[in-house]
Figure 1: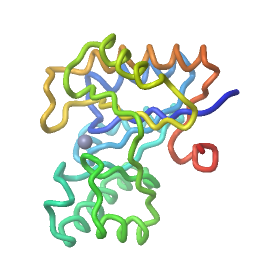
Figure 2: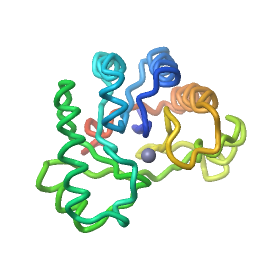
Figure 3: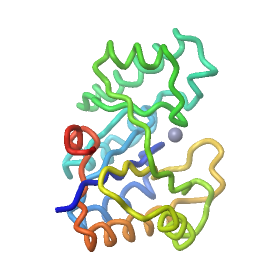
Figure 4: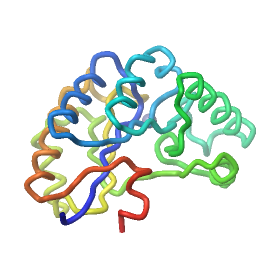
Length: 200
Ligand SMILES: [Zn+2]
């Protein structure tokens, strides 16, 4: 084994696209992390359950998809308190947190420490929200040297604010292609929390 990569999916769950991502992961016996929007999770508890049952990690993304740099400290605290509480109502104790757009403030970091949440960014951005086709996204990734052990890869299994696409079929296709590529490169997959201590 030459390394481990983390596939991460933000903004879901989505009743159309999340099941397709889950199927793509299952076909390759891969693990991934879903940074969910709490209201969408509450609307689709079955999808959250399917993630957990398949061994994926459910991390917290947000209650309201607003940049922390545009919120008060109290607003960020309310977001994480209510949002993670909603996930707990679904039986999920989040350990991982990815702030909207990955934008963290001092308050984000303080709250993460207080709530025992680890903040996660990414080092590989697929830009899948732009609506590019799978070949273009994969080509861009290869131009940057391809997949490497330790990569944390950002994708979206639902439409978030600013998405320039109607759906997420190219993300499903990219997931399949990345997993096939990882398998050939003898890269394994892990959830972000499982990867702690494994990733460089
Ligand atoms: Zn997002």
